[in-house]
Image (tube, rainbow, N blue to C red; front, side, top):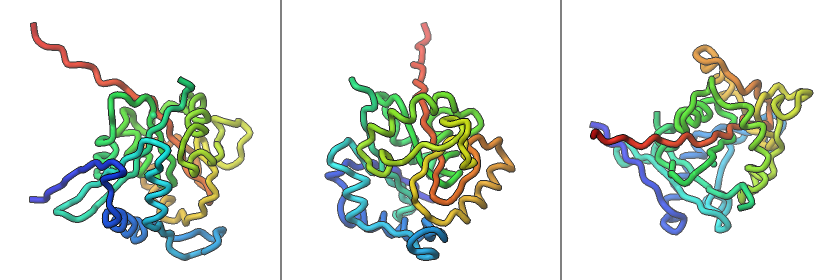
Length: 224
């Protein structure tokens, strides 16, 4: 019988060996740089140092969640929480395991449609019913208050933010991260065969954006 285990760790519990395995998983599976990048065709890689400094920052509340299958690392996620007001398969399981009652908004930036599908399912909606108007209203404030530089510096793109936007996106960001989109675009064709895709087209250097309001779980009523 397959043994699947989900675990959550605070930054001080995350060892260099755990980050080494996380980096190896990323480096072996993420993909290659696109034609407009500085290293076209080369694998996209992450180092232990970058994972520690940029994905588990000291300036915010962060955590590391992983899933192992029969003792082998099969997936992981780095989570960061922050306040955005002055006074948010295996992937679905990972994202569901990070939920806490005190959260108000969840968000994800990704070039992969599968990640967006998992996020929608995990956070109480479906990809066909994502609240585009809510994203339009909340995305700027949420992202500008992020302690993650990559998120904070990303530029909002898409017709929900600018009706004259010409990127082909409905909701997305310009990250200038020129990873190859060959595999995500193949996945997008599959997704479009099963769902009404709401986020638009994906060009090199861009990622899709979801910002989702938490749907509170209703308390169970005891029988009288």
